[in-house]
Image (tube, rainbow, N blue to C red; front, side, top):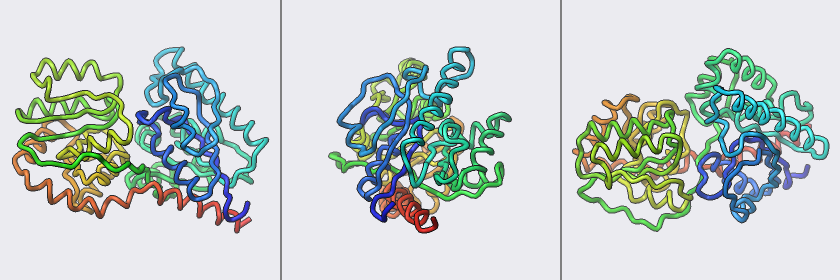
Length: 383
């Protein structure tokens, strides 16, 4: 390797197919940032069924290597091990990913292997030749969900023990990794860069909120709808960006409780559209039951949009450090009370929005790319 051409292999089960595909979108931006820094990126992931945007994928700047599996269009995090079909899908993801990884190792020499997340990609590369430096990027479900299951906890510890470096995206996760696995970790942020918005924020009499995320239980979209119903705020507009298994249930709840026309389900949106949604909102609402540090928080900071959130992961820490939002308990009554508070105290929005300027640079994916490039340079010097 020379100073200007480090090579990184990224292993991930989560990579977007198009601009409106939310899972793994920050990894797409990481690939672009690394390419701009002169890093050659190869990315290994499974083939996902769905509409693929070839131009979008090419713009990532990464050499994309795919392998077949049995899961179709279902994301790994959404697969429930409740049927032989699902178990077979997960096994095929692990075994075929591991096989393809070994093939890549025969024909290539990488300065760094970056596993996103601990599972399943950490299993793909487990036992890799020690001449390749390996790093694990431990994110939300790795620590908050899988570490609570005995078998998975054992597997996670094995993977973390073997890795040369461990990264995570939140202070909360870093503490949990130390407590549960006795492993040290460094923060590598996941905030992708949004394009400039075409929307100029305008204060109105109605309360304008946005929710951006998967419509799944862990993200708490049902908590938000229940809180809206309890709050009895009549003059409001809520834009829900994302999709998932709860959509029909949520739409039914909205209709049966007289919120039709006030809560709008927009489906998946690309980065430009998300930028516009955030810019036009009074607040971004994060109503998750569990989080580490959601990407959308850093996106809101870029658009000068304050945050109201359940008290999960690092959100309270950054809201208090920069004074860019307010948090509450992860239940519908607490969230309802917070909604009423921000609705009654409108001047708060401009105060919090002004403070987002200081927070915007913290979670920048460019910083993460520079950290990884420097890591490759240091590895080269040490060899």
